[in-house]
Amino acid sequence: MDDGEIHSGTAGLQGLHLFSEESAVFQKLKGDLALYEFTLHKDGFKSSTIYSRIKKLNRLIKLCNLFNPEEVKEIIAKQSWKDSTNQTTVKILNEFYKFKKIEWKPPRYKPVERLPFIPTEQEIDQLIASVGKVMATLLQTLKETDIRIGEATQLKWTDYNEEQRTLNITPEKGSNPRILPISQKLRAMLKRARVLPDNRFGELGGFLGKFKTL
Image (cartoon, rainbow, N blue to C red; front, side, top):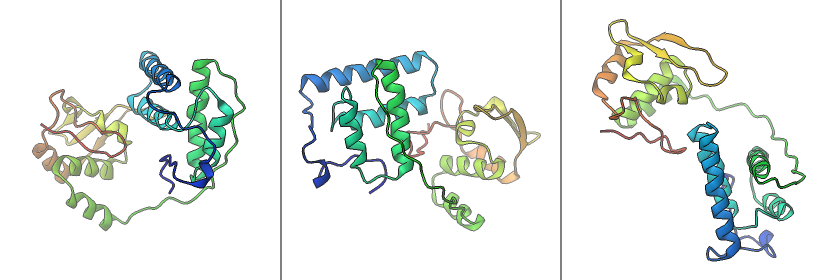
């Protein structure tokens, strides 16, 4: 198991304190996380960043006292996660502890570099053909333009020039604005996939990539 899910049914967690949701410590932690989430929004962090941080911290507080960094390190060490997952968790905790002004010595994890899986064009086309029209439009857009997922989901109809068949891409951090051509196929898909009332192509729900449609 290495999807980042915290599990407590192993012998390795014996002796670690599991908090009841009614406990005072648990309720204090929940309150601090709510304040932390509010602060992240106020400071301009992206919704996806906030979501991933709060989700991870909410899972951790069900098993340990985040106010006790040594206990937190023990919990992380006894999970069957990849080092990359551990590293991400430590980074999230670093930011939370800065917010709470809690000192700790973070554990060091170095992920093993692996080559990414690259599907064939036929496999990509099969995936696009197997999903709903709005998700298919998103995937076709990603395939043709090679833009980031965040750039795709922030596109508006005003970014689309139907006559010239182009998309005006607003960049994410570290990228550049650009105007990209699209195929007649994608143009036809865009005409069929009318989407959100706020005029965006779509919004991703968490990490599942599920579009909301009208």
